[in-house]
Each structure stands twice: as structure tokens, then as C-alpha cells.
Image 1 (cartoon, one colour):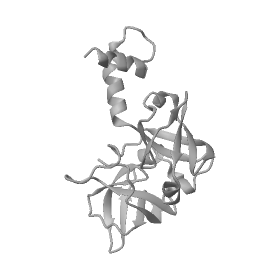
Image 2 (cartoon, helix red, strand yellow; image 1 turned 135 degrees about the vertical axis):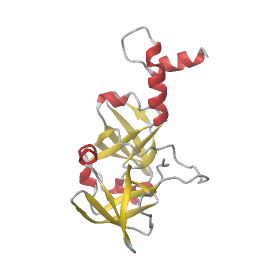
Image 3 (spheres, rainbow, N blue to C red; image 1 turned 90 degrees about the vertical axis):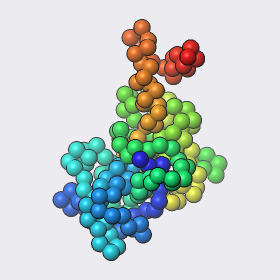
Image 4 (cartoon, rainbow, N blue to C red; image 1 turned 90 degrees about the horizontal axis):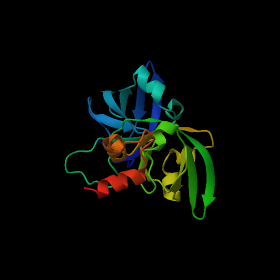
Length: 206
């Protein structure tokens, strides 16, 4: 389990034969779980200043592999008693999102992210979403996209400074949104999609 708060940017040393080797100040142990650009991976080797994780072919098909170069976000798995500041992140990437528009908004920047329609039902206004492992708040939700407003500190200290229109990103929807939606979707007699308004009305009856 993770929080979506990036510990540091690790430098990519190499990516060969399914093994991704990173150099970072953080030094994990063999067998530790670590989120790399939001994907939970297992440490299989380490040296005095590097560590290596292994990616299965399935992981490589799901993840935005073009972002696994130069620098990547890393976050160690939470330990019991750690301070909780982001939101609950599993490190299980649901799908790829695409940066569809980038616009300045005062002292911040709006990033619009499109996603496959089957996952848009889990994106909630003012809810949480994880982009390449970064915990963020959703501002607006459209049919197949949503808007994030990113402050300069986050842009400068994450991969957001490199994102352009068309960039693919790892996207994990909010775990609670998925659970709540699937708990209540069978409560409707209609065959159409369950809306969050429906969920509110159902929960109000309890």
C-alpha cells in the first residue's frame, strides 16, 4: 500500500531483459515493494547505490513504458505507523491516461487527462486519482476526461514538467470509488449505468 506522495526522483541506470535498475538515495532491501511511476514492483537485486526491479511482459503491456527512462517517481510501501498524507494507493495501474491539454491557470497549470470510457465512472469531482504514482485531486470531470490543477512545486519536482499533449501516463483510480460503485451497481433495477447521484440516494436510505 502507498500514499501517492513521491519520496524522490530516481535515475534510470538501465532497462534490459525486463530488469529496471535505478539509482536513488533510498536503499531498499531485496523483496521490498516499491512503486515506480505508480506501479508496485518488487526489488530483486541491489548494490551499494542501485537497486533493480523486474517487470513482467504483462506489466510492460499495461504501463506507460516511455516514461521509464531518465528519471522515475519512486515511493516505498507504507510501514505500520507511517504518517498518512496522500490517499490510499494500491500500486495497481488501471489503465493508461493521455495528456489531452495543458493550460496555464494563474500561478498553476491545468492538465486535462483523457482515459478509456470504462474507467471514467471511477473519477469523481474533488476525489482522488493517481498519475504516474502522484496523488492528486480531481477538479472537473467530463465524459471521457478530467481536469487537474497542479501547483508549480509539484510540476517542478515530478515528471509533470516533461509532460506534453499526447503523453501517456499510468493511471490508478481511487480504490474507494471502485469499491463503492461495484457494491451498489447491482442495486438498480434499470440496466443503464449507475451514477454517483444514484449512489448518494442509495446510501441515504441506510
